[in-house]
Image (cartoon, rainbow, N blue to C red; front, top):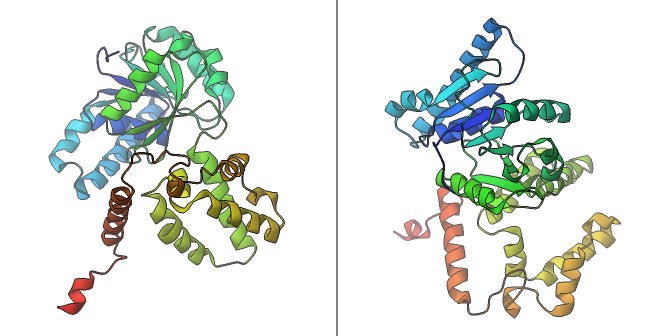
Length: 331
């Protein structure tokens, strides 16, 4: 399925709505950012000024980091229209996609869905940016259920490439493909996940952040050293290797034994390995060394794979200034 007229609408003029608007605007899409709150005309004009000031500030970041040219800022801003739900000019009713980015309050979302479904073309994809509600729950408030899905963007939306796309039980494969193609077309990296609480990133992130907080609580290390360890150690590795790929790289037995050690030493079941790791230990599918783990390594040149992965890691370390050029020391 192709876009009909190449236009995007975003309901909700907060931080997420503005970030999504900018993501599409600087890729050449006309975007209508819809304010859903009840405001006086003066309050709306103040909001509009605030929105464009923020977009201009974000574009300035892209200018100074050489992502866009300064002379393109005016053109990009002209791609964004800010309107109110009460406006008579419903330029967004035939948009190809409408992203709902209103507060995480179910009654607010229900109200907005009721309003926009009365106005939108029946072919417009409706995507909630929620990080809290299942697509299977929200789809009940949508007319034309096959066109609805969740698309969870990460802040800042105009910079972060990942978008978690979570179809509902009613989402058609055609609309899902159209969404993923649209996101890829603006340089985003969509991943598909089931309508499960926390999606992928928030669920992993919550565990990591809670554990970091516990380390402070227990006096294991200072706030600064915990953050340094998480960026220079944890973060650097997983910028190159995915979590499951990393398990395969080192071997599931490493995680298995470390998990049991932590569980026994700390007396906390949260450190116990999940059943899938126990099963991999039993079947011998522990990773790269056995040819299969979470990934299959059959027919793969392991040496080339390892060298290419380490090359990416070295490039990242050099870029961040963590790796000294040894040759200079002998010149």
